[in-house]
Length: 240
Image (cartoon, rainbow, N blue to C red; front, side):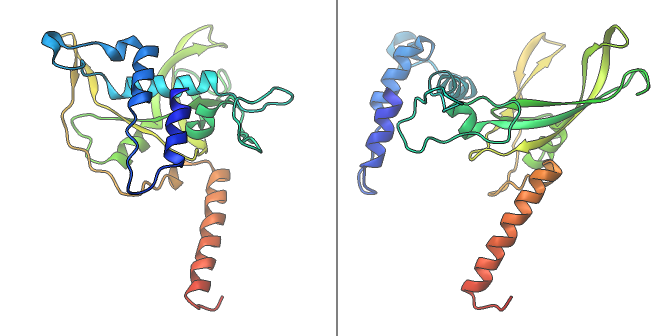
C-alpha cells in the first residue's frame, strides 16, 4: 500500500515539486523491523545493507503483485495488465516482470566424458546479475562477463556422486530494468571473516550486454537497432 501511494503521488507531482517518500519508508520499516533498528545513543537508524534492502523490496513485489496467468486474476489495476511472454523459468509477478533475467545455462561435467555424463542445458531465473569483485577487477563489464562462466559442484546422475561442472550462462531474457550487484564481500581464510573489498570499479554510462546474450536475444536486439538506425536516417534526411 505504501508503494502504491508513493507511485500515485509521483504521477500527480510536477517537476517543481518533490515527493518525499516518508510514507513509504515508514511503511517499509513497519513491515520489516530489521530496517527500523535504532543506533545507540539515539543517533538515528542503524546502517543497513543496500542489497538486502533492494532484495526485500523486489521479493515483496514478487509475492504480493501477481500478473494475470491463464484464468487467475491480477493484482494490478492497469488495463490491459502486463504479462511475461516466452520465458521458461520466470514467474508471473511484478518483480520478475520488471527485473527478471532468464539465464540459459549449459552444464558440462569436468570429471567424465560426455558419453558417460552428457552435457545439459537449464533455464534459471535471477533478478540481478552479480559483479564479483576481486583484487584484479577493474571494469564492470569484464567482471560481469567472467561471472557467466564458473566451476560448480553438483550431482552427476550417471556417476552417482557429486562432481565438478563447468557452468556457462547466457542471457535469454532481458528485463526492462537490468540490476547489477557489486559483490564486494569475500571470505578471508586468514581471519575467518568476511571482508569488504574497497576497490574502485569503472563502469560505462550505457552497459551493452549484447555479447552476453543468446543468439535469439542478439537477433532481437539487432532488429531493434536496425529500426532505430532507419528512424535516425529518416530524421536526418539520409536516403535508404
